[in-house]
Image (tube, rainbow, N blue to C red):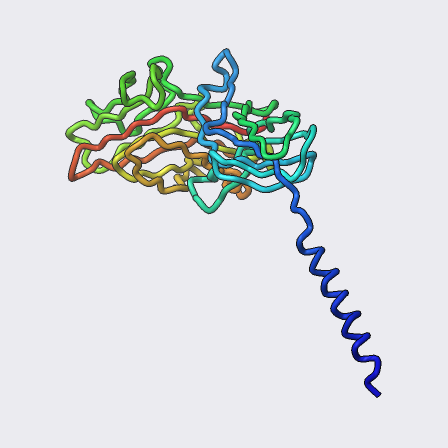
Length: 295
């Protein structure tokens, strides 16, 4: 009745051994790329795109058109391919200062290159990006010259924006702006874009991505918002509370959704509201302000 049992056990044992052999097949040996920090942001030589200030924190990588994920910079990335491959490096940013919102910045180009990858070999790369074509830069203030592109609303006699160039610059040998409170300013100072039309800029095209970039170093929290002028009057809308930062930081403020509810005939400008500290002198520094959207 059980004469076939030994034969069945042999068959099961052989099947187990065969399946076990598959588990110990030789694993592929990866090649590696090491992507350095920072990326290079190349801007137009005529200063029509401002300075090459960037805060690219991640790289999003495609290999032969297939995404292999995003990685915090700097990073070493294994690639399970050898020989000639096409790599695409896309610049990742923190959207609107929210660390959990890590996205590919839509206004930077993709860096593409061909590499001959070898097992266990590490290729070291530096990403190079430009602003994509077709962008409009209606407002740029990098304090290259003393200008009135930013104005102080309700300015008191000694309120001012100083243009400095010293060891505290965001980049060596670059100017930056520093606000100075008068003794009579007791609560806050408001900086506004000085636009060609006193009401503000025209609305961007419907559905456009709109960003406001700026660098800052501040010992106080401050607000960024928009002033909207319509037939019904003027409204002021705070958008982002920016935390104090003792070293230079960059914000890519995504304004795209703010325009969905506005009419095409509205005008707009951006303001920054900086409180006057009651404990220590306010130390607020600003640079590389850019309003950017597609023309």
